Image (tube, rainbow, N blue to C red; front, side, top):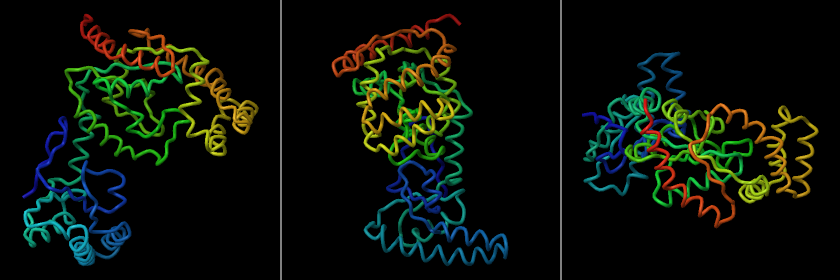
Length: 357
């Protein structure tokens, strides 16, 4: 009997002891049902081999070869990761579409005596539900954007508001990217599908009756797209603008991006990506600042010569912010800003709700 996926608009809770993804490691790495563990019944190479036999020889031969591979891999999992499971263990198994891979493995587990079940429609049913929420429906939450020029501590303030009990959606954290040319983080970005799984989980945990603070972004975070439902809500959301002096922002950026400045060659390579926008002469000057360890001066130049001029035009089309906070970027100043933001988010959100249609 197949198990139907519950509604993803609330946090995903499944009545099983384990959720097992039997797809190949590559499929699992791209995206998977939250909380699932990877116990592939076909490796990446084995899956390719069976697929080739299916197309070039015959479906019967492919099923025969596949069955032998599944049996061997199932035995390895039973003797390894599943060796300590007792008789009451209840797993949910899924593959791409709830077909042969998941049913074969679930059947073996059931023969042992475990209360195994398969996910109806497999990963494909889960993926369809994610797409429905992020592409086909409107977001039921009231978003408020925290906006400001580069270096106004928007991400840090977002986290500080969350620590004070505010609701936030951290797009940069979920996408593992700072959202600028200096944005790459260790580990790289997830796949687009994995980002959307993370977003679906994060949104499900939010209360639609309370406002949600989101950092103002473009339609992309690094190489990943902000899904349509979120982007549409962001475009319609009121903004709270953070304002700080250029010098303060440069000092803050030099501190915040210290992890990047530790690797001078990598930083110079990243700056090299700006040649098409800023020209060889200016980028060479910035790279020389890296060699000289002049990171605060570099940050000041990037802010005044690159970020502010590029973002001013984009921001001019966004309209007047609903509120503005003049802040300093030392620790005490950030604490005061976060304290002010918490009630201000609610106030700005309520003012938007009360506007005449």
